[in-house]
Image (tube, rainbow, N blue to C red):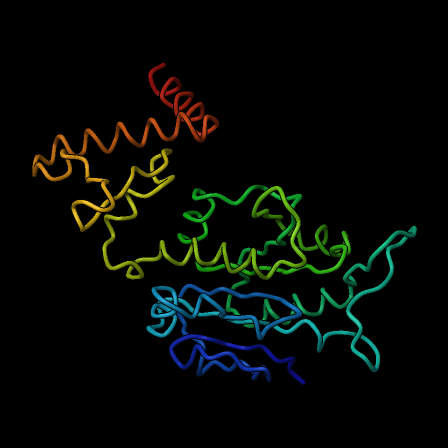
Length: 267
C-alpha cells in the first residue's frame, strides 16, 4: 500500500489534514518540484500558498509534495523515533523509518531530486544556493525533529546538510518554507518584473539600496532629490553608492568577499 503524500500544484493549493495519494495525473511533468518529508504535512504549503509563490503554484510553475513521515513509523503507534544510542536527552528519528520515507519519496519522481537535511550543522543557505536550486529540476527537503536524525541515513544517502542560520529551531519545516520561498521566486515567470531580481539584496554581492515612493514628503521626511530628477545615470550612481555604503557598514563580511573577488579578477 502506497504511503500518503500531499500534492500541491495546478490542481489545488489548499491544505488538508488528511494527506491524499499522489498520482501521475496530478503531478506536473516539467514543473520545478519541491518534496518535503515532514511529520507535519498540514503545515504546507502554508505561506507558500500565498502571494507570488501561491500564484505560481496554482499556475503550475512549481509543485509541492508534502510526504507525511508518520505512516512510515513502526508498531501500533507508528513510532518514528527512539532514544539516542549511548544515552542522552531527547529522541532521534529512526534510520529504518527515514529510509522507507526517502525511498517512497524518491519513487514519486522519474529521477531522484537533490536531497537535503535541514540542520544547523550544514552549509549556510544564501542567495547563491537559492539560485543553484532554482536552476535544477527541484529539491527534496528532510525536516528533522527532536534531537535530529540517525547519522547512518545521512551517510547512506549522502544527504547534504543546509542551515538557515546560526540558531536552533524545533524542526525543519520553517526553514524549508523559507528556503523554498527564496528559491521559487527565482523561477522564470514567478516575478512580474524580472529586472527586480537584478537590483535586490545579494544579487551582486551588495545589500539593496534604500527604496522610496509616494508621498514625496512624509512627517517632515522627503525623498532624495536625485530620485526625482529623472536623470537615470545619476539615479543609478546614487543607488550603487548607497548599496556599497550599507554593505560596508552592516555586512563587512559581504564587502570583504566582494573586494576579494574583484582582486582575484584583476590579477
